[in-house]
Amino acid sequence: MSTLKLSARKEHYERLQLIHQKVSDLIKQYKPASFAIEAPFFGKNVQSMLKLGRAQGVAIAAAMNAGVEVFEYSPKKIKQSITGNGNAAKEQVWQMLQRILSIQNNTDLKYLDASDALAVAVCHHFQDNSLQKITNKKLKGWEDFIAKNPDRITNRQ
Image 1 (cartoon, rainbow, N blue to C red):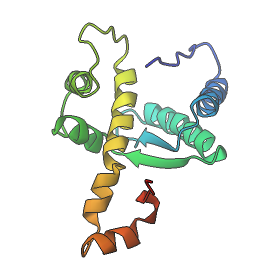
Image 2: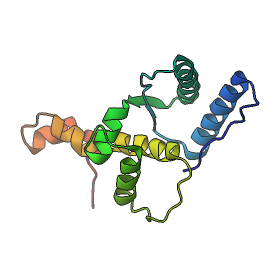
Image 3: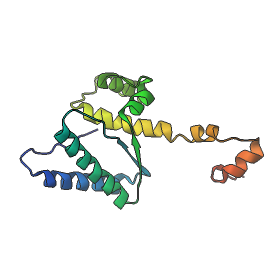
Image 4: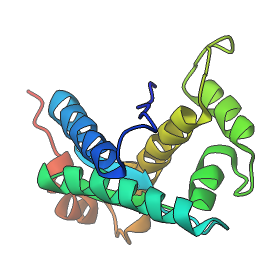
């Protein structure tokens, strides 16, 4: 749960390049099956929104270049998924993540942005849960389940 700290002295385009490089490196290192990101929210400061959108865009581009499927979740959906309350405060989200993931309460968290990113990952895990996908399918018994889920069948001898 580290964060990428970028110097304000660097040009904006250099910072975007560093974000792209860091995301690309992480993808090479961990080989994720998917890439989840928080959808931009509407703020009052247009310049901040533009910079955030560009940063998200280069991160998404890095994932797409690596052939990783991209998923986007609204801040409200992420909070709802983690805490049950779409209007939860960042601190509430962090506390719930500590419970869900058995993270010790004394874990030092310097930046809530790191817990936000972790919340996006956990939200995606919950949304991508295969049991949820199965229950959303209309099944007519075991034969129908097997026909619709051939990848879940294993031979035990």
